[in-house]
Figure 1 (cartoon, rainbow, N blue to C red):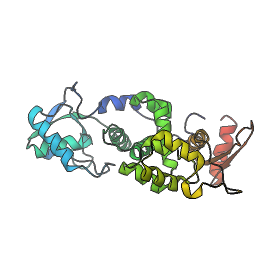
Figure 2 (cartoon, rainbow, N blue to C red):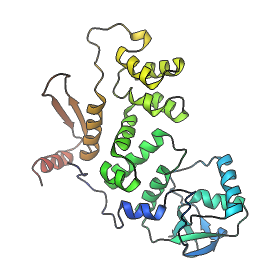
Figure 3 (cartoon, rainbow, N blue to C red):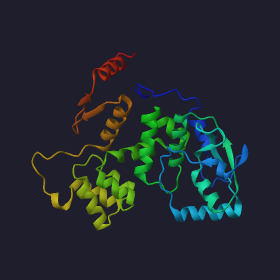
Figure 4 (tube, rainbow, N blue to C red):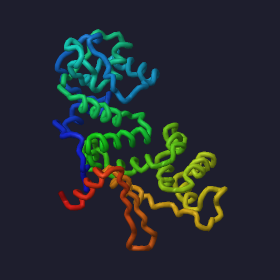
Length: 294
């Protein structure tokens, strides 16, 4: 069950090939030779670009660099499906915007014949490479690559140059309550702190206490085992926090099967129970075929 049972599509290029096109970053020093230079006005953004906001100060800084050194890494574009005289940006919208601020008349481009699906995939990959990407957005990008395109954690780790544990730990953060994820996005809580809260029934009050007391990650780990100050006394029948590794296995099985998977494994015991929830008879048929090895 290492791969999705329902692969949404067969990749024409593969994740590694798409990564090779995108390159390492806007600041990559080993520039690729552009296919050609095209007028700025003949290039337009991808309307389905997942990134909607561009920090003005960062754009101004990039524009200053572009004015001095030019655009080092060419934009990746495709011929617009709506207008064959126009090009649609696949990757590099920041560079295109910075070029306009710097008053460049032309931009270097690599022209590719991507499908709409591959355009979205490259846009997600480019988002992952952003230096200012917060842990939640990075994790959401990995989840998109897994759910939309059927990539496994191992495939992403190899192609993106990340460790599998890095990807797995970030994916765990998506199971946290919305308020805790908000602290991560705002930068008031680190990924290290947040990992101690995965599967914890008191994640929100604990997160607030971490922030208020400015705890280190080690201190946070210790506090998570005791519970928040207002809940420090043991309550009969209170739920025991689920082990983070168990939560991760649940998440991976859920992503693989496209069905909700719950694992009930009591600490100190060898056995346990797995519950798989299906929403339709078609999903049940898929599950039965998977179990039968077909």
